Image 1 (tube, rainbow, N blue to C red):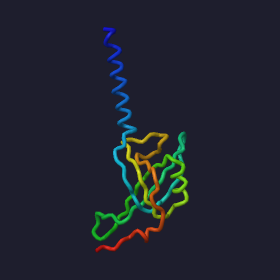
Image 2: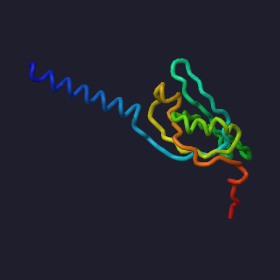
Image 3: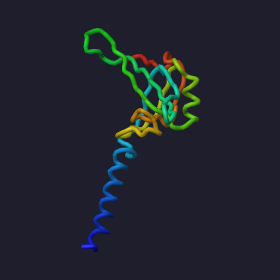
Length: 131
């Protein structure tokens, strides 16, 4: 009986480790979002994290003839990225992000973590005419 306790405990620890990695560290998706930076702030009770909201406009509304804006709430871990965004409120930004399955308190309140600022600038330059 004592022979089986070691492998069973090792197997349970391995399964638990894989489960924690899958839930909190597995990158489910990554991509780029663009829009106007609505707000960006550092907040939290125990862990102070950078949190922001990007407003993307031009999405179809359920009501005919109306436009509805879409929000993208995100967190930032790296101070170099946070420094760029802190000075860009109200501007058009293009952000590269990673999506995790669940947030961690020290990583931020959102499951979306911005890793890079691709472009800062005026949204008027970004509109292209339809052909």
